[in-house]
Structure formats: C-alpha cells, structure tokens
Length: 100
Image (tube, rainbow, N blue to C red; front, side, top):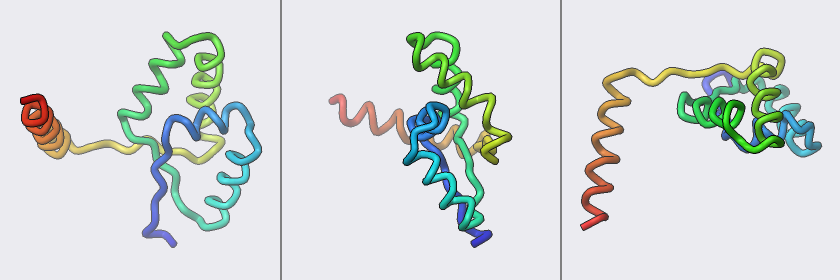
C-alpha cells in the first residue's frame, strides 16, 4: 500500500478537529491501510485563511487542524513551480474560453 496516497480536503480536516466520529473512523481506517495523508498547498492556504479570518467556530477548528497535522500524520505536499504555472495557465485559458 506504500504507493497509495490520500489527499485531504479542508472539510475532513475541520471534521477531525471537531472530533466528529466519522472523521475519526476515517483516520483509523486510513492508518490501518498505511496510506500517507497529504494536504495540498491550496487546501492549507484555505485552512490558514479560516484560522486567521474565518467566523469564530471555523477559526477555532482550523487552528486546531493546523496544530494537529503532526499528531494525525498529515504532510503538506508541494507543487513543482513549473507544474503549478502550467496548471494556472490551463485554468486561466479555460476560464477565458467559458466566459466568452
């Protein structure tokens, strides 16, 4: 299972921070399967924004989530600059095409 990875969404991180049962169960299953947990830079930026500027409840749980990455075994992955730029250009082109 070492070749499998799991990228987490902000919502599951907030659910883990709130200690929701299904989120804890999910984390337990993933740990059983030895699947590494990752967060994309964009998801981390969203989480950081919530921790700094969100409404009181999301702010609290976003902060807990960020502080819990190590405990949960969550790793922030990086996007190579060339790949990020290519993806950005592709999305920009698609946006311009759909706006016409």
